[in-house]
Amino acid sequence: MKKILLISCVVLIILFTACAGGGNGGDEPLKPLEVILGELGTGGDINEEGNAYEILDLTEFGWWSLCVKKDLLTQYVAFAEEYGIVLEGQEYTLTPNPLNDELLEVMIGESVFFENVAEAVIRVIQGGNDSQQKRSSGFTPTSEGFYLEKEPRNDTNLYEIGIRDYISLYPDKQSFIFDEHGTMIRPAYVKSTEENAYTTERYFNARSVAETEDAKGAMKYLKELSNYETYIDMSNPNRFRIDGSATEILPPDNRWRMRQIGTMGTLDGSHQFNIADDASKYTLSIDKDTLPST
Image (tube, rainbow, N blue to C red; front, side, top):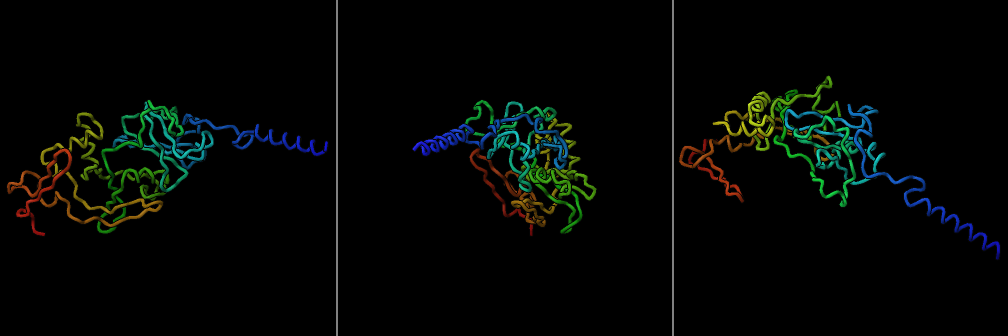
């Protein structure tokens, strides 16, 4: 009987010892919920082992982006479905790179300076986060994409690429946006969210004289020019796309655009179409009697 009692006591001691180790893997301490970006490592080419993050500076086009190594981040903070970075009192969500799920990325507007980004806090996004922090899923740009000049295909050397795809390709220095020497290809054209494409020279000229001297001001200035349609480039480029975790190049979209059928204005015989905005919806009207022959 004494032997049974002794064995029972030993079992209980073992069980209590295991419980004292906690439910997080014995002696492994609980990880914090936030970390200073600079504590992960230095900034630079994300492909180099010693670097923890990389910045793509395209503030001249209205934005910059940050790319962070996820494996380094999870060494310092608790694992989570989402992480955010706090910059100037606003929290931006880091999203997985569609081509490399070991990288997290975010786009930030040019009004937020990145010079001190190493001091920014990255933290776990959870329901209990400080409600006073403004949340943002990312920056809403004034430009939709770029046209790059590359080897001709489908009778054009232009390739359209969305700016978010551009960001996701940047960590791979042998990707579509780099030339054979590993140099990033600068945009030849900038495309606004209204589907208006301008040469980068025209865009920079507009930016320099716009009231606010930023990307938003440049697009506003170009849109408000008299006969602004004459400044829009009507090229039909090839179209680069990221589809899931793969990439593809589509041929040009040669369908007619509305502005190609004529001018917009009151349908009094001198204009081909008009768009009315009644606050709740847009109404498109076309004067078929003035349409050009196909």
